[in-house]
Length: 116
Image 1 (cartoon, rainbow, N blue to C red):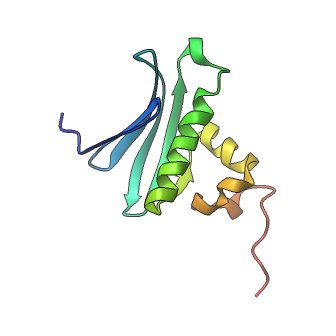
Image 2: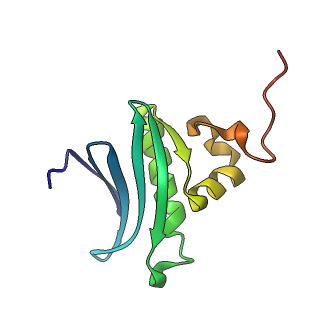
């Protein structure tokens, strides 16, 4: 397997190969969670799935993975489309993430677009 890109952010590492990538959270050298994504264009990424090991559930690992994806998206001017139910729920609850969200207005309770 050839990895095209590897980036480490504290205890989270991002890898990307072709149009697929992942953010992996590690604790003591063991993977405790991952957030997978697929590229849908040069500046659009679909967040597909978040998984956290049973021992790490409830410790904030999932949110750490989403935060790493958001930080990376801001740094690279990439929009995120959270299709993963967990990531989508984080985006729906936290308005501060709207700047990197590809479709925040499509969700129930989202602010409607301004009248033209």
